[in-house]
Length: 282
Image (cartoon, rainbow, N blue to C red; front, side, top):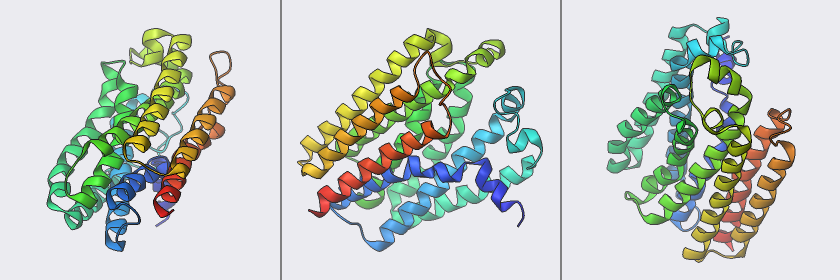
């Protein structure tokens, strides 16, 4: 029992807020409003299971890299506050939660569950051989809205795919900038990222481009689905928040790559969720 808080800290459970609102957006758009109670519960549990499983496996797979990186050497596995078997147990429980929740949604959600699990286990390895690893992380988060749509509809359409693309671009941009602080370590350790491949200044240009395209995808989704004005207010506020992100951090100042930077991303997902909710209820 005393290890439960350590489990939550190790997988940064509170950061589930980054992706969960986008799962809810996919769920609400598929439902054309508020979903049924059972759909809401099972999609929420599936999302928590998937996100926790992905983070637990990330910690297991990258434990030796984390131990060598000065920024991450105090994480629970390298520091020894959690044992490897502890995190394996957490990943197994999360996998069972994801599978059980998918079963209660529909047959397609259950059949696609193994693909989600495989991808969440695969993407942590990508930093070992490709600079596109940052974008792979973006697509890990982008699973959420399309998966939620499938959970409601039992099928996929172009609308949730466009929403997932927006999320992938936004999350990929975040990850590109976040790994600026590891650029020297990645070079020494022969690991790969956008920053190591193109340099810090170009990495910021790429990140800005991704954020711009992300907002464009959000707007396009609202136009194509004929959503009402609160959704577009959410898009506008999201653009303002992302602009503020580049006020906080830039190639000459990465000192704010901490709690403020993380909160900005939480504001993006929450703002888009509230804008969508208001648009569907009006």
